[in-house]
Length: 376
Image 1 (cartoon, rainbow, N blue to C red):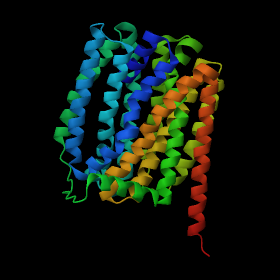
Image 2 (image 1 turned 180 degrees about the vertical axis):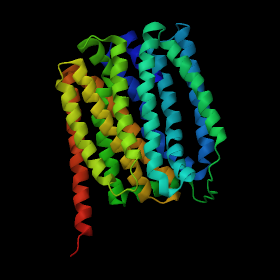
Image 3 (image 1 turned 135 degrees about the vertical axis):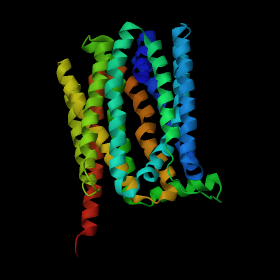
């Protein structure tokens, strides 16, 4: 709800696709820049304690955003500043949360846990925007922010209720050396390196269709905030279905193939969305995009976590979050600027080319692995 309301608020105040793109830039840039710090924090301290502190900070950010909006003091610079604060918190929360799963369920059920987490996240993307579209039309953006602030009480209650068996961490090296070791570990693992690169391309590919949602809903299809809510919810519906199917699978033998074909399907979905003449076809296309991208991300997350040692898990998850979330500021800013120069549809079509590039990159890695494992 908050994400939907923020995008709509900036667009309502400015009517600028560039500033909508700048909102995404401010939200996600800190993840790109600060995730390595979040990664070393997750490898040096209690991951559960880091997550709890981050959730308190998220709640405070939402309260401030609600107060400014409901009191009619809100401006675009204030929204951008609070979005940046949200991104800073995210840079520390995501690596800690991703690295905690293995201590909650163990290695055997890790792939299912990752897929289930993605499914519940995207179930919120399905329900939240639908409700958010109604609240936007009926009560305005401030109520969406206020409701979001209250939801953190349930999040914090859940975190205090669990007690995962985290190993005791005794780290003697300096934080700077810890960062260098993490980057070196990722670079010298070819499969891990290619997975991270393909993930970056996929997220760049998906940026235009997400950032330009308000423009497609309002200026192309004339559906207003309700239409924007339906588009966002359709993305979430596809993601829920894709990750639900993935969560039912056991083992990791099929994950490499899922990563490949998900990138191809995403490219096809973006091409359809870019040329779609109708709102209903666009909903179907964005559903396929959601199905593909989040299925690809969950499968990639599983592959990465099975490749790495737990001592590096926080840092590797920070690199993964840089590719998933951190690439979005670049994609958001470029998408907003490109849409004003070459048009929204052409920008989405260009995103499809990035998805096909990710598929090609990973296909070469799969062939490389098959060649190395084949008998001489």
